[in-house]
Length: 61
Length: 232
Image 1 (spheres, rainbow over the protein chains, first blue to last red):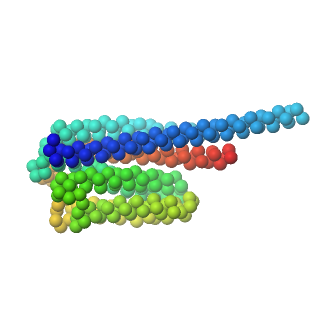
Image 2: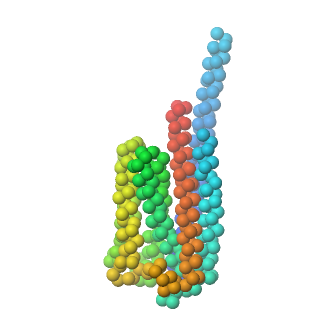
Image 3: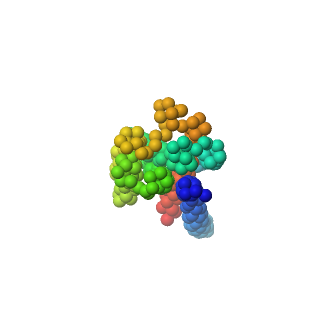
């Protein structure tokens, strides 16, 4: 492999590494979204059960 | 409610598939099909990656400025987010332009960087200008003031794009090669030109896919934040 070939391979390599890095960042972002959605889901369920308990109390008088 | 994410999914998939196919084809054609340049030899093959990346960076900055103009015109927050996303993607391509350009400089000139070349310095200024956009954006509280100032800043930067692009042609020392001449056959063969065009279209499709992806992520982030505030 000549020096020029090594540099060309490095240039294309930089591009591929940047793409892979971006994919990794997106994967991390997706994981964060999943955590956020799970947290909101839990919060919504808690709210719903609170509401149901309140309604039950109203029904009982 | 459900139409928002659905609207961006389809073009994103098409652009991602097109980017994948065109970039793989572009790289394969650059390595195995396009003839070596008479003057530069094998090192000329860096152009099939460097030029598309640089043109895509310009396109992203211009797209960001266009969205900034639309924001100032319509005062719609949607355009502010779109402008910010385009500049974000443009900055990533800007970093790649500087890195691949530096590698090319090392092969051709024997140095990683030359401060005496105005086209390099102008691109660096353009890149730093848009990098400073993020500092400006994050130094102001979210709201109309941040959106308006960011839009005005993004619009000012667009002036640097034609200057930076034309600097390659106006450079006195003519060290930086000009890829497109008025007569195509003067400096590029048909095989070289078609390989370059495939790579450029592939890179633009990649930038488009990244832009839509990033935009969808940012919109989702905003919606999740709003939902958390509602449930809190």
